[in-house]
Amino acid sequence: MQVFDLGSNPLRELNATLQAQNSNTNQINWEVQNPRGRHAIAVGLDAPIEVRVKGSTGYYLGGMNQKAQITVDGSVGPGVAENMMSGTVIVEGDASQYAGATGHGGLLVIKGNASSRCGISMKGIDIVVFGDVGHMSAFMAQSGNLVVCGDAGDALGDSLYEASLFVRGSVKSLGADCMEKEMREEHLDILSNLLKVSGSKAKAEEFRRYGSARKLYNFNIDNAY
Amino acid sequence: MCGIVGLFLKDQSLAPNLGSMLTNMLITMTERGPDSAGIAIYDSTSNANLKLTVQSSNPEVDFGLIKNNLSIMIESSVSVEIKDTHAVLKLPREKITLAREALAKLCPGVRVMSVGEKVEIFKEVGLPREVADRFSISKMSGSHGIGHTRMATESAVTTMGAHPFSTGQDQCLVHNGSLSNHNSLRRKLKRQGVLIETENDTEVGAAYLSYKMQQGSTLKEALESCLKDLDGFFTFVVGTKDGFGVVRDPIACKPAIMAETDQYVAFGSEYRALVDLPKIEDAKVWEPEPATVYFWSH
Image (tube, rainbow over all chains, first blue to last red; front, side, top):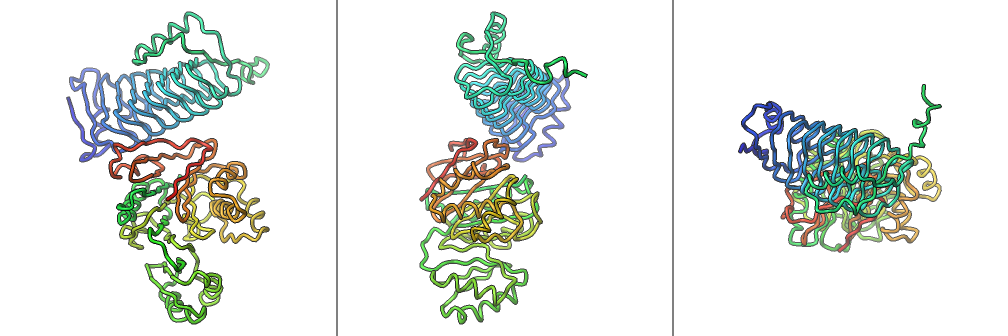
């Protein structure tokens, strides 16, 4: 295992080193020590390596990730896994606002709670939160799945496009054009699989599904150019 | 952007370290706002006299005038402790109005930073480390304090535009965000006789809170009414004689994180500001909820 101590080495060196790994690397296990809330740790990775961050981080952990599996033994600041393309980011603690924002793919697992705007403008990423999510989560979400094992805050799924939202607990309020939808077999399959791969013990049958009512301006063909 | 830190001690054995802890927290937030910085420190001992913290851009002349004349003008003893561009004047409580009038005559360029039994506010243009060093903040002890490093958006980069803002005895406010209705609210408050000295949005927020409390609101009630009467973005941290409060607007896009142990309650714009606090690894760490008032007092 490769160990990188941010207490004695610069962050840029860490990111440059991790970004230099390719699919053929034999250095597949990395441990990052002393993150101390720093921003932009392990961003822009593009190789199937495993990175474990030993402590809490600041903004944008694992941003733009492709292929790598990044685990944080702590909590993360705003914008974790922002614009992730593929791979996995696992947060053992809580996540601040806009977790998984604009993510195109991959899996983001938050084992604690996520704050406001979780999954804002998500474009294909799967996000599983073991706890609660804050207000305006999945705002303008376009594709992918947001799974909330706890409760959701105000205005869930406001101005939603085609992402699927699954919530086990209560939803404080639904945003504009978001509605509860029937949970069919294919949704249960997707949900069971996401719960399984993320390590949640929750049962798919305990969830409700929410999606777009497709009534907003852009869903009306008469408004098309 | 702006960076805010706050520290409220539950364990008074940490009091001698308050200034140094708060200074280190604020330096960590330097990148969030390099324009100006300020710190409010609340004394942990009780004082019979009031403290008037003043600032001058010409301290040799102005503070000399104060030393030689103020005590004669108000017919009372005044102690003057000079710290760079600031001076802390200690004088009997009942002389405060007289002293402010005398100061305005004696040296009109002197600005009042704070008035109170416990609070002292030091703020200047510059980076947190420089500002803290100028006033030897890290040597100060106290029961609680708040600090701010500013990235100016609403008004000029000046000493008076720096935070914390104090508009009432032992009250102060720091702000990350921007208020949209500060002009109309300033006019309303001025009509009620409230003194507002700058074009800064945060000063209006501070004056609003002080006004509400003058009208009989508790700090908690005043902070709750902010949610109704203030339009815009805000994460506020406020200090009072014996307490420390936090409130965020309902959208809550300005970051905030808190940590609590048996020894302290700490606030930071980012977790980075908190990492050197004692036993932070065992602290309860959380984000304050939007539109929710938090308050701790001794």
